[in-house]
Length: 315
Image (tube, rainbow, N blue to C red):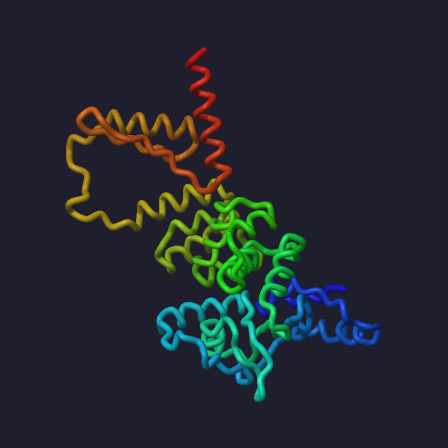
């Protein structure tokens, strides 16, 4: 039987990786009853268990070399936690007066700053870090995770559990570039992350929105995507227009009279042909042609188009 954390942002994602294998019939009935309120997480894997623990019962590791934490970064993380919860559990070990942190002091501090009373924590009951890492890695490809939960799980496997990108890539059967693009979703604004977590936008929409650096503009654009029910392709165009409207052009960057209208026209023709915003720039007989793409799927489409065009020209 698997007991998953309710989608409250507490233990979701990693909570799916923990399998209860130590339950008797009475225990199963108790967990079923407790899980209905969304607060009960008590799952085991690899000599560890996942629990909700009071932030006041956790103490920082005295042997942690890092003593200073950037206050601005903590504030940003706490805002994300308020919106979507703690997607990456802290790791603790039992101590005399509660629990001692092994990994995740920054998340623990941000959770306290966000006003959380409890945090999801992996309570490690074995000295073997490899056992826990291998068990989580083994389970990672078996569960269905939201794209943001998936990103959080990948990042935690790499950062907290010492998993290499090659190990992760091989186990989940995804390329390193796909893993990197998934992890980038964690850079979204907190409000946009919540929309992704709630299924209001897809990972494709989210990757488009990553092009917008300004958090307020990013959130406003995401709101419009949801309100108007825009497709990923339409979102690409909206983001492109938004960037054109919000990018401040400095005096020395402004286009001067006499620009290469022929190159501009050629770029427009290529944009229609390849269905992406192609830019043609040339100067003194030399230049570049730029084909932007948002993901590997679009890259493969462009390559196929270019190769087909090349083959047709040879014939």
